[in-house]
Length: 449
View (cartoon, one colour):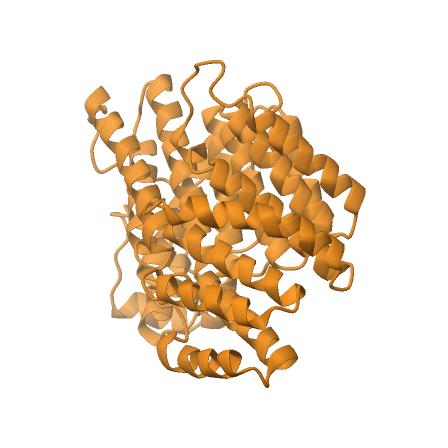
């Protein structure tokens, strides 16, 4: 941890047992040691020690919007995630935030950072491992590595490379703890923001929801330090998607509107189209048809401007292709159908758009998880139309893809779709057969590695 001035012996330990309170970072070191040893989070207080007043890091989303604290928080959280390398381990010390407790702190990402308060406790001193400045080729390599991780996630799901991404994120925070020129520091903060968002996305994909939210929040803080508002808007869209997944469309809409406001000047048409598509998803899950349709039209109209200005786009938004646009809009109509009590009207709107998404993803080997999710989405549309045979045929295709990706999100949606089919069409032979195959071939969970 860089605390080379810390040492201990039996007499010190005896004094701690007798009630002496050691100074930071000793309580934190002891907490992490005991947590790692016993396979459960052991808080400082559970050791009979008092934790010093420090900025919140392992839990909570209302964090200080300042560069040094952001680096310290990302470093600590990523280190804990790497050290306590067990699925869901950090979840016992994390709690999901929602409602005003989530939205109000996020609104401060657009507020200029105030000057440091002299009374604010300084972050723990960090002894840098080296003092060499990064070269341009080294920075380029860090950025290309991040893009490579993103490609692997799209191809293989979040369960295969999550720990590698967290490790890379921790390495970047170590670089940020060294003195760097301002331009280099901004690029490193941008890299940290992209990696933290990707770590959050992968955590979300394998079902580690509290971890995912924490990484998203930390990513937004890093994007603010990088001065990259479009990237911040993209991170907020990921948080919005998670809130939809968790059944909080009101929170999702608040986050998307915040993203749209923050990215209104610098976001490319592709990013703006993605934000409109996510706005439509939120409205659909709130049961607001007219606003959903308006947002879908805005997404389509804005996407038609992609590439017209000739400006290069950041790698993080390149995933939002015509296939993704169709998939998101189709899911909005599909969600409306469910909210409206299995409305055939909205199911009929969803079908051709979802079919187009499936056709496009079938030709795209780089986005297999999205292909599986849209196959499942198309299956749910056929169930809404009371066509179980077509639904099971698509679900069977999705199962073949699901076995090649490490995504608990895909697995969960596939199980849920088959559960719905079994409940509504349990006497159909194709449904019975696929349900049995699913129980045999689909793994119970995607391990986070």
